[in-house]
Image (cartoon, rainbow, N blue to C red; front, side):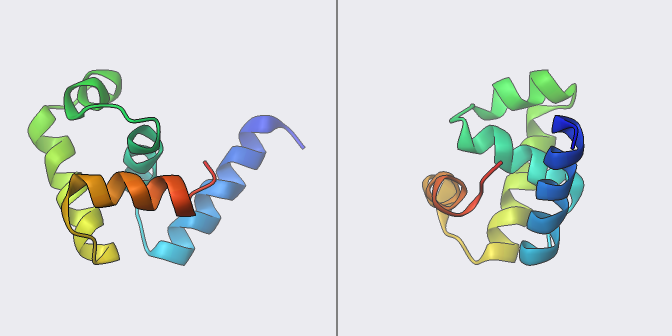
Amino acid sequence: MHASALNEDTHKRIRQKYNLTKREVEIMRQVRQNKTTLEIAEQLFVSPLTIETHRRDIRTKLNIKGNNGLLLFAQRHLDI
């Protein structure tokens, strides 16, 4: 299986398990790499406010408090 297909299978599994959108999974992948909001925004060509909105939505869906909690969750639970 091609690496990108494997990556897409992993993303799909994570989206289904945690009820996240494709973009939210991409944000979580970046969070897991300890990227800042500005770094993520620049890489995805969106505004930092958009990234903060995604972070807030992810925290709400996963019932996580704060960005540190988001980082810990990504590191412990997401193999992406």
